[in-house]
Image 1: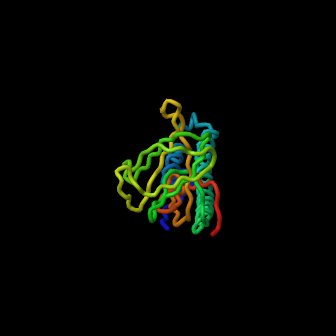
Image 2 (image 1 turned 135 degrees about the vertical axis):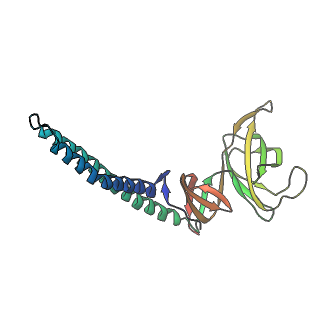
Image 3 (image 1 turned 60 degrees about the vertical axis):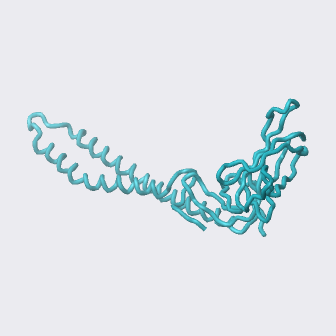
Amino acid sequence: MTTAAAATGGVSASGASANSSSAKTALDNNYELFLSILTTQIQNQDPLNPMDSSKYTEQLVQYSSVEQQIKTNDQLGGMLQIMAASTASSYVSYLGTSVVASGATTQLQSGEANWTYNAEEGGETLVEIRNSMGAVVYQGKETLSEGKNSYTWDGRTSAGSTAPDGQYSISLVQLDDKGNPARRVPTEVKGVVEGVEFTGSGALLTVGGAKIPASAVISVNSN
């Protein structure tokens, strides 16, 4: 399992805490300077025209408000860390489970790769399969059935050779009566979760070697 700094929805809890801590340190470092300046103002004011005491009070209130805001941000940062840790734990529970997720990438193993598709209607469809480098290894026209069905690729390429095991992505585009692209057919993949990786944009599940966003998971079943 690969782990990194836990983050939820692109918000880093550790980053928020670090920023708050840095601001608090800067405020503490300037506290003595602030009091020194304030004391100097009082000592050097014109005795015949002293500054209104409310002005000093206002400056103290402003300083206190900033200090309270930084403390609030520090507390929020702590809450984010707790939430991120809780969310990370929930994703770890995916390990070893069988999931179905929206996606186009799956694993070719022993001459077989499987996808599930959901076609609004049956008809001629352009099937395109690419390897992990993005190169097209198979392209052909096939007739797909309406509704939710499975599509199996035997690993045979357009050139007639056998593709090596690995990750492959599929694209299904239904054609109209004139043979022009009409609509894309959504696909799903399934497999056992082998790992969880935490990134700034969310959790990624490793299924059959492919990285699938946790947000794309449709169903989860224990093995």
